View 1 (tube, rainbow, N blue to C red):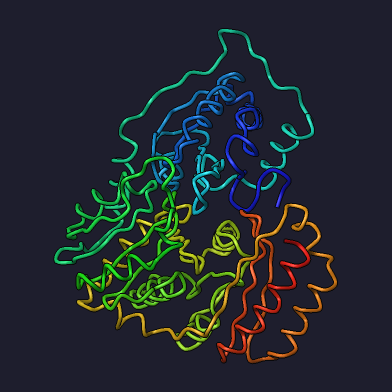
View 2: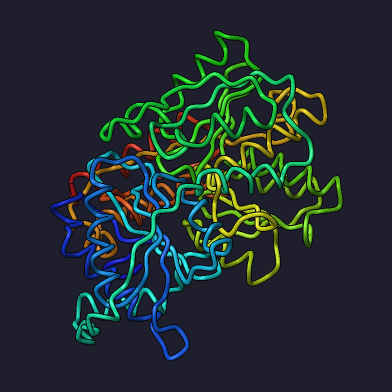
Length: 449
């Protein structure tokens, strides 16, 4: 994790931490690392979610990019995976998504994608950081006739929808579903996409006003969608986060189907069709222990990475796997996308259910989930640094580890995107792991809060 870029781009409170000046300088530096003798005027796509600060940061990025000679094509409000996909379709050199994903509206972020549609490699992020933070190079000042230009593209959302539809072999006709758009990017695409696939859709939280993104809705607040699906006797529900790169589901009984279950269901379906490459699935250290058991029973290899979809993707690319993701709902279908895509994932999940004339509640029984407790402890920015050396926190973690032994596991880590320490315990006995998790969380709060 770099000084400017975390696991999912540069992120902070808009206008105080993530300022216009910083955004402009990131734009300048990003263009400078791509400018070469072969590419003198790189083209950047810019997309954004529905946050109030999106327009402000978009303007700052445009100024920075154009001032050093890069050209800009504006996509408007689109999901993050739309930016990644459209880089190739529009023959751009890079893409930028302005979003803070699942965070509250006051946060925003800048994610940069390469010409291949993947999140920018660590070495290029480091080069940008060196220019912005260390002034390793003076910002380029080209001649007046070498400045960049701006073009507004009006077909971006439709082109992205066309792409997702093209990946689905079996439609959703006859299905009644609810879609929670988190008042974010999917508000622009989800209804049209899933209606086009044949589903009868019930829309929820699809009226963004700039400040209601992720507010008690979306993939981090599933209770309203769960209640709605059950009350209206629907076949399923899908919830996306603010930039729609995550998807969680609700089954026909109103029960949560998290990312681990979604990946298990989709991987098993790929395997049954002979499409699961190397009979392997990629997850993270946060993946439920029940998923490991599922893989063993079904003759699949489970590959574990650090938390963060970028690390999942790196493993998939390195070894040639085609599905992986996180419990939080980042699912990567590498045959169709270069990043997590909530709407594509949801469409494939519902498609396989419809193809098999099955209920999601019955298919989800293929995996048994171990009890898991996750407590997020808010800490100071200084606390993020001291976490790694605090002896009392280390002692609390060791005590929990020793108590659980081989009956569970303890994972305590600093968030890569928020000022939080995440305390996760998993085991056979919920009461036991809940007690141990609270003990660790209390120590973290006392020491770093």
